[in-house]
Picture 1 (tube, rainbow, N blue to C red):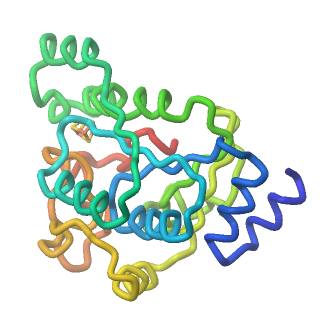
Picture 2: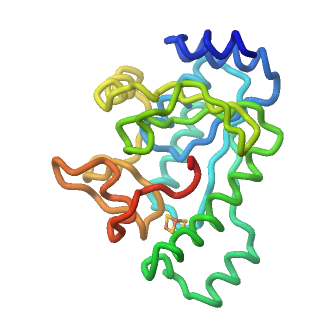
Length: 228
Ligand code: SF4
């Protein structure tokens, strides 16, 4: 894998890069999609090229209706299955019983607790058995992502993270979506850039950072723990 790491990192054709990884790790390459614009690019590449990648998403139970609409639109367009992971019922029940419906507004700790229950724990289950995790991360999305390599070893999770869009600009991404007529979330037409859970995402103003609409009431770094 040592040599392949360098080859993959320099591979500009994403379909070829993914295919090489699926040949190296058959049945162990997964792609997590939140149906954002970056993820729609990768889903299109994976399904258009019939790449043997298991695709999954996390349904936190708090997503926008527009995101559910896009899930169905995407399923109809590509006619490909994807797994949907939900939080543990008991963990959500305990959280709501003890702290109410929207405890994430009260403190960063509460917000992280909700993200852990609804995202991080289900992600851990979804990644079980995977050796390569394909993500739609782009460096421009967050200051935490500027140093991320295209392919990196995640020692915490025990797998490779493949971030083929990490150096893509916003304009490149939009150009790909338009050129290939890829379905997208209608909220993007209303000023939403980075779209997560409904109570934790707002539209942004022109000139604001793309992640400014996520957990906008917090001043700390805007990450949910999935990629930390
Ligand atoms: S984004 Fe908000 S609602 Fe979604 S899991 Fe995190 S805190 Fe909970």
